[in-house]
Length: 316
Length: 320
Image (cartoon, rainbow over all chains, first blue to last red; front, side, top):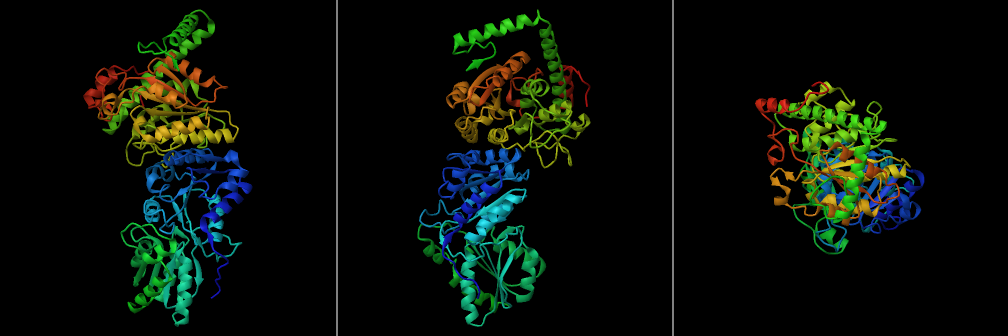
């Protein structure tokens, strides 16, 4: 197993590093924030490009509208806040002022999922992937570690259209290559196997790697695919894998409703039905706790992936 | 705060009196100098265009058997003056980015019949296309869409309260581009009940977006009744002024008052404030049975009512 943790880092810092690089290389890139520029790791961009940063205050609806206007004027605005506040709170603004006209706005959402920890359910969104993939014209990206988040941030500036980029707060394993080229819509096959397909996104990719290591020792060959782009989904890669393995586990830090599991189930049901197990949260809110405690309590870790793999193989 | 017309309810009476005198002198001079004849002729021409635009609105809404004539007709004189006299715009070489030109955003998207008539009469697209309003496959969607690809439209509108923010962003992009043009946006007074309007108000003042010229169609009506009875806006000029804007109050049915208010808003280059022109208007202006009531906010006339309305609106440029 070739994947090694090169030291824990938060994915939001990957976003910040990517934004800083964009500030130096692309004069069209602007940044907007609603009183959370520190949490979004925007400080370096702000320091180097004060004229291209707009502090919007605690007024997210206006922020999305202003970003839309900047994009209409030819700029590439990166809008940053916590995931809940740039999705559910401003859904109609995203729908009318961004999605409907394919306006070139990048919605950059930190603190996604349950792993932001102690702030509790008001700040923990596990609905955002569903909300954002329902909006026509939106591309939805959920990278798995610092390096991938940085690469994704840089890549979406080159793409002309609305993007939802989802990342998180906790420091997690950083294991993908530093110099990777991020290709929107191209799933990454991290591990080749033939007994089960594991489709994982975001923080759950590392948990899946840990699960695969354990399962390999037990003689269970798992195929692990990193679905960093949820929309458009790399359907070809998903279907090729399930045709080979004949069962799948989908792992994500999200509700079942609207999540990657539902998306892949729909695809598989229409094309090549196989048993599928979900590693996700079923119809409930989060709560306060440490990230590790919460991920364990809500069944979003390597141990639960291992159980799901054993269960789905029996269902073949 | 500046009052461009002659209302009885003027708090700053001394200041208003000065303005009144200056406008009076201006009007008097029109009769005396050569250039004033051009201005007067322009005023008359603009009134003629406005009459045709109101005919278009009534005919489009009647034909579609749906739509929003009330607000469209209260804002007709404002947009006619803006597009045919004030804005630096190029219908033939129109671009979505608005580079090197003034830009206009309609935030109150239900005024789409007005918007489409103005754009067609200005030459953005064929006048005959007005007959497709609200019909399947049309570029003239019930509320403005950029997905439909109609020239002249920079952003969709319909869900209220969003356009002021978008216009503020577009005005900022002009500043970044060192593009010395203005961005205009029209909002409704009922729409001003939306919280996002006041988020944008604070933002634009804080960022000193002085190339942003907002206009309110202050007709005092909304779907369910008078705004004063639903969610009173209270002292609307005072609110905008306290939010840090340069405020002008004008008569939205007096072309000269509209012209003066635009002149006032665009000649303050040393003023850091965003501009708000509050246009006092009447919903359904131009047709006796539609004027001044919320009943015609979102209702189409019958064929008989349409004929009655058209008999009150002179055909000046030829119907579509």
